[in-house]
Image (tube, rainbow, N blue to C red; front, side):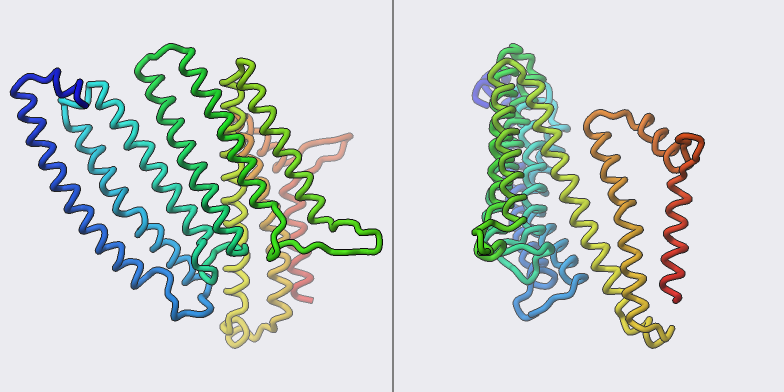
Length: 364
């Protein structure tokens, strides 16, 4: 900022001083207004201590309110500063403008990521948590994800500055190598917390031959795979394959995020449908017994889960570089039917058969 200011003439320096004073006043006003607005939102729509067992719909409304409340002040300030940078000709074309624009842009992603993590894991309000998880694990997982979000944002910001400002390629490769290694270590840290044995999640089951249970075996296998993945990323970074290591670790992080989103969405749809079907409306109005509703609920899960799994697999394949047009053509062929050994297999016909079978079971 000092170098940029010294290169301005007297008229430009005076304009910059006036704009800085105006910006400080506007940011102060937004901060005060946002603070009271955040308190208002949290008080009336956020997590309330007087509700012992909040319902799913109330949890979602509270999560959305808290997400808006914790992101409204910094997001408003960042958006205002970005708008000012786009309008300010003195700063826009300078190196300082590039730095500030990139910093604000990636800071916005960090703010949104932190707010999303906070409402998903709800580390300090167990009864309002959207996912089933122990409080101790939720707190430690939230801290690890916060750190990961900051690391991803900072290194993405540095990589963007180096690319836009045309620094030497050696510096870009160095940043990519360090970034990939730190992201891999963050993945290992989060996986260790998520699959670690705690007193509230996994308990050691003693048997005659002192063998550990199946859940602990799976956690151990996943931990080993994540450790191998982390070591492989670090080795690739050290031996000059920084871009490949960065591509793999970035796609792995996004794959984990997509799987988590689909998992939360699956649980939300399942709980919402179950809650709707168990309402008294179906029993009183249509005189349906709960056993029928449970059958319908079961077959809904059988039909809906494979469809969501196909969408999840398609999203992951597109993320890893499979062309969308090729994927769409193959999916269409699989749904409409393909021939193996003179036998035509149609996934659409199989799905309709399952639906008809489910209806027959439900009626009977």
